[in-house]
Length: 450
Ligand SMILES: Cc1cc2nc3c(=O)[nH]c(=O)nc-3n(C[C@H](O)[C@H](O)[C@H](O)COP(=O)(O)O)c2cc1C
Ligand code: SF4
Image (cartoon, rainbow, N blue to C red; front, side, top):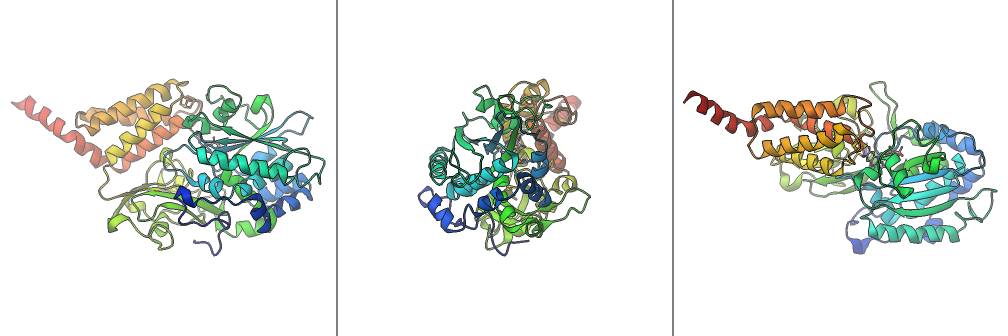
């Protein structure tokens, strides 16, 4: 399901883009010359509730990981009461393997700002915070310049939303993260913007009701917001003509998706495809990944950031859509940024490496996550070094299983990530884990008979 024309990346040269010297930001002036901010002009001529309805009709689902329908989330906001209302834009992007939002910031920041402006108009939000991953230093400069231009162009500020055409104004601020993965979780992000430690909050209340500074707040991913101007410009029917219906009774997967591919492929990068395109097609396409590196065989992939779990060798043709979790026994589509592994990959090492990330990034509030992630890491390290006994593997699956199987025992989804990553790797590549245990077990057996 490749696209006949790119949507979010239509102004972006897709290759080469990784070279910092090649990063040429589209300025506000260039953006306008190529039709930019026309969707905002159209939106402010509409009633805000009609804008929300268009996003609902397009069935746009969040691109930050959970896939929650954006229009439905916007509909949860209470009626304006004269007090402040916020938009928090999630560009934390700190999950290993995920680097799709960076492309949008690097090249087309005004597309994001147009999405922000339309969302604020539709939801009557007067202040937007653009929350940017701490390590994205170059991108901070890019966003700062673009926001300043948007003020000058009459998008933000008192004479904003297209030069004071409407009796409503929006301010937009850049907020750089101090650099912890957990700050990408929506309520930790709100705490961080408030200047506190990035600790997720217990929900409910949900941010739409009580978010930033206790006020109604919408949290959306960058890619989600970038889809909004296109939906307003070309309509919900056009948007739902891309992507796929669900085959298992879930909400559909419509629209396009940025897919960031890393790992053992010939050409890593961010590619825009229709939802429902298979990993195999993207990897084998000459326009995209140009095959597995060095012609080696595909072994496995992690399709949506390391927290989502792994697909095995027989699941190469899995379609990247929101059904993927239920169909392939993983957590979900996540960010749709596959990490590819070839036949030479040591899956025990992969599991240990991921566990190391999660134990370092646990914020420590909940016992199953804080202690469980340490435990999982230590057990995997033991297995990797060939020092584990058979019962350690059972213990590993028990500890990892308990971290993700009891709703309400942890505050946020980071513990589920540790659980899904570990469980699916052990389940789908069990023989590799057992093989690491065998020498010790064999030695023990020899010892007991002699
Ligand atoms: C540990 C953790 C990290 C997350 N990191 C991000 C992130 O970097 N970017 C993002 O958009 N969403 C991230 N999310 C999901 C957000 O909590 C939230 O669902 C999302 O920003 C909502 O936007 P959307 O509905 O537009 O997808 C993370 C969630 C968890 C549990
Ligand atoms: S699940 Fe982990 S990261 Fe999330 S709040 Fe609890 S301890 Fe912190």
